[in-house]
Image (cartoon, rainbow, N blue to C red):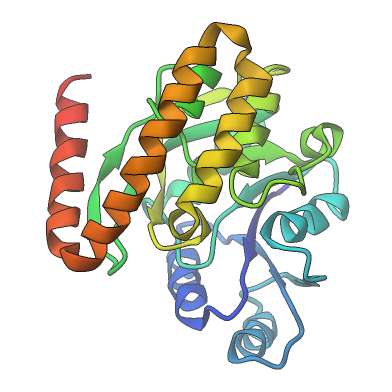
Length: 272
């Protein structure tokens, strides 16, 4: 039984190197798998370098179906006894002993998946604050972005992922949150109180906020039912307007946007 860290990467050499540095700095040797296309890019060439240096255990060739399809390629090929931890290119472990901590938890937990907190990082690599581990995973909280967890801080038993059918390929941005909700309906998950990852904005979920808003609307409708119908429509409309304003503000005032996020995170943590 191993904890496998899976990184899907395409045309992001800088991000791959940042994740590599975090992995090689861990207190325990990390079992690392890359999913990347054989496109003769610098990223692919560097992936070959990593496997020759024994930093990467395996390279799975991305078939080109998108991020979640690439994640599913790793799921299909997995040893059922292993655990999978999807860490994006550019993202990092929260501390030097994070991987070791999760390996120990994987040996003792009776649950099929684990979750912890994360640090939120800005576009330019600065840490803005901490999103702490919620007391328990609640689908409504997750889908309305309240006391939520990021997929970079979730770890799944491979067989459980296979039984769930992996990530939904019809969703382009929010398939990770859909997966967490489906997982929670079968197993409440093992809460890890520590913060596990550093998630940097600027990836797919940030760049495609409006797509995510539409997908989350449909996911809430599917899993939360009529009880949340009014709130669901209101939240969709609110996010539709907010996303446009936030993106414009970020482009004009990136430093101010970071400062506001930093303050918001501090206030949220003080209120807990």
